[in-house]
Image (cartoon, rainbow, N blue to C red; front, side, top):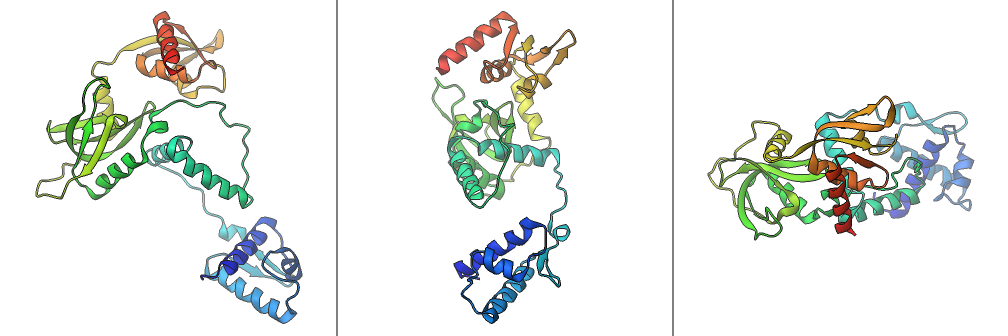
Length: 310
């Protein structure tokens, strides 16, 4: 099927039969579905419609013919309910975040524009009025592409890593296992060939990814959950605090979930033993919707971070 006009006509016919939920007579199709001409003879129109119906059926659209016209059996056409494992849900969530903004967001918005032009609609009543500034907003599509290729083909890769912005990059070699999204940051996880142990690297500090030729060396496989590798690495030198944060209902779900709302004031969330750096960055992204009340030095850090961003 290479005729663009035919494809357009079949698409219009499928949407017309799907969107109504009722039987459509041949004359209604002829008058209302773009692609069929009222100037056609009755015989020519009937032949074209029958061909199109058969083509849709072969494509999997369950078009049925009744005494009064045509309809689509929605029960046979609709997909069953979809469920995802936690790992699959994490991947989909990461993909959705990557499409909201940054370089990959251009493609996501382009796709939505095409869907909207075809008649799709969505309810924007619950759309967020702001969003956190995360690694996903700044991650290079090229970096993700190169790393994903190495992971997929189980190829050892070499890259430059800058552990601290003020220091020069160092060359690292890794058997990559995967990409982990944790606390608004993206990490590359794998077997560090130079250190002979599992390691995680913040993706934003990596550059110059290059897959190496396959060698006789064995590709080391993971023996534990990749997220646990990241958590173990971050646990070294982390600073934890007990905090009190004002989180109005319906905002900053991740902050509300990190603690317990107080009975005497439901807007107050008590957070025991949370990572200081995570709380500073997350709370700053929701200002002025949320307010950190304790500890005082945490408020100063948020203030300094926002000043730097401005």
